[in-house]
Length: 223
Image (tube, rainbow, N blue to C red; front, side, top):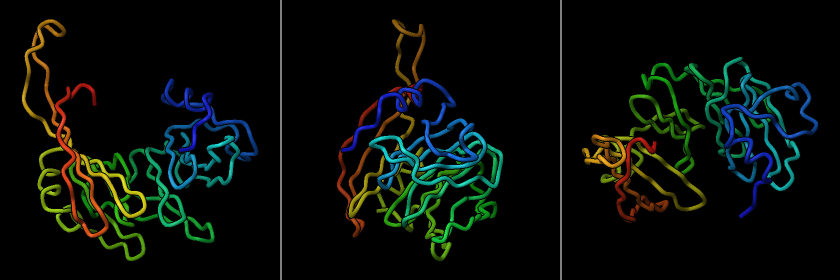
């Protein structure tokens, strides 16, 4: 596993926006970072002006920059099929680029997802985590699938009861659901009760065969 250099990693953890590492960033030299991900062998950084940049995680040197078409901060960015995809705050558009670096904007307002809060990847598809539901998109055809179309039945059913988190690499992936599980008295800490959540995880292969990894109770406040 490649290690992130400490100055950039600590900056990301310490502030809502953070300075980009020094280098030949051109028009992005004065931008501030709003989100960071290690994906596809790149350190992907979204900026507060809607642009993205990719860095070599070994030395923080910039490898590419893509100016934003919106001035809103980038909310999330992922790498899929040899190109980046990203979303910005308050926008119904999914942003990407073609293989010859031309801008690509996909209007998602018809999906009625509410604000899109996160992006993920799953079996070669983009995962769109909206405020009200989750959808999967085949980027080539723009075909949209529901969790029941894309996931094993038990994971899809569990995702209807709470939040769904997905991660995919190579031939396998992880799916995690976060569901409310009631309350627990915690007078020694809060003087009242704490909302509990249940984290449940599965490993899934490319044939959609899944294996339950287990469940873990935690506080909703932790999320």
